[in-house]
Image 1: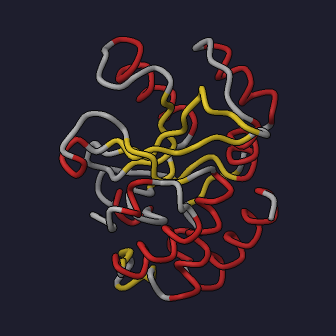
Image 2 (image 1 turned 90 degrees about the vertical axis):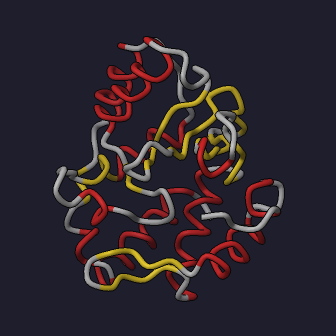
Length: 197
């Protein structure tokens, strides 16, 4: 299934079942604005990033309730300006994270789901989890084979009850999440080791 269809399915599910997060998703950006922002930091990104940010420009965040924007494990969707600012601080101004990784999602506590800018195939690319505490290393670990596979895993996790909301917070059945995500992303070592989240 293509990314646009997966995004539509996810949005429909969020509006019917997870209204707190659905209402915090910001309207998407025009492609030319997305292009300008990435040109400003001199990086090329896959088409899948354009589709993601044309769909929605991340979750509206505030310091008092950042956790209420979590879509999946480590899945608070950055608005593009914030993602670029995090990339510049972590990868351009400092050498915390290799420049080939661009952050799309955060845990809100220093962990990131990042796209590998040098692994583009058919307009999409692999996603990695950067979590020094969880992975016991500052080297990002493959977690999703592509944005399309990530979206498919997220949607199936909601359908199967691996993700649900209670008192406005995401509740995760890590074992079920690991089985679903691992079956969709069999080449991602993170899930093969068993979900650590």
